[in-house]
Image (cartoon, rainbow, N blue to C red; front, side, top):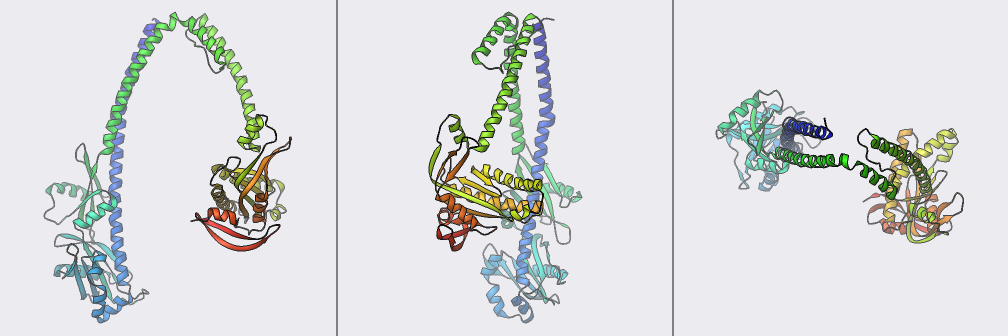
Length: 566
């Protein structure tokens, strides 16, 4: 079989297999996966609505508790004074409760007082007798002073949410003097409010409501047979919409309300769009692959020698040892190409080894000096020195580490100190700060150099707060009680590289001395800042004024303790 026929056969078989796999994947996995995801998302939305309704009941129960456990209500149920009704049961009070009725029932189950309220017209109305009787009957179940009740009852075929609880004094002491009940009809405005909270298209139908659509009866029957509590049913309505259903049970545990959610099938549509894009992309790639392969076949034999010559020349021109010459067939030309590639591989390995050693030396230099200073040093610049108008310097010292060093072995001491400073170094990289040096258990950091920045004080403040958090985590992990004493000051400095062996990038000036004094005169476990740093941070952070303290070499200075972010 000729090379042309082999290539054409391989292309044909590959494309046939690819189209077969894509067809199976798209029909069996992709769309089914999107459908399953759509069903899962729909169930999650139904659960959101159920959780929202549960919160709705808890809110009503909390209001009931506020009215029931109250000295004034406790006295009112006993003496029935009109002053309580005038002050607490007016239109404004019931409007704020969004309650259709509130009832006060004594310990004998007799209605002491009840007031209805029309939420639409915002005015007081009498309580219908059937409402009063139903709520009184429900309230009689909770005269136990240790219990309260919230749930749904059906009154005149209309679902109503009620919350009842015992009437106690403000300290919650026994004995109970009766029950207070707050009720709201679960009507369209309340359901619309629930829909706004969940951002979903929610509807509710009372199961005893004669106007409930007949089409819901099979759905109600299926939900009633489910063992899941609460039951959730997802149905596909059409290609654009699906619906989620659930049943809300009343206080007696019987189905009372059907919840319906109408959900757009956005996920399914996205799956269809993705499938179309996949098929279209596959067709384009297949055509491109076929054309390229045919062109390659035409040139594979006739131009192999010229390609080999061209590749060798290109490698020589670009000086790129990672490039390779083309290898095809099993003849003298392919053997020559393989030999050239083997030689290039050996040279590339040597070059990579050299590059690795150079990178190690580069990394070692960057561990000693900032990158911009290292670049200047590598360019053979002498006498590297710069002035910075404003930087922020942080000195931190581990309190109690000297005493700890005399109690543990040297290897363990170094391990603990390395663990602490490694945590600080990782935080330092996040805030793009520059560590100047560590001396024993002292840690020195600066912001605003060698690359100036406008928020050097903010960066140092964030670093200091994170250092406090890290030392707390260290103490918890290693069962230690170490504290950091930190000092911060903002001002001008001079920085540069000194020495020709074991050189170091350091900084000098009164700012450095003042920052050191802020630390040495600080309080263990606190971050002490100077007035200059305080002025830079006071709008964004919380401080405690320590007052003026005597600073060695500086006299009395006003200092502050950084406590946290505003």
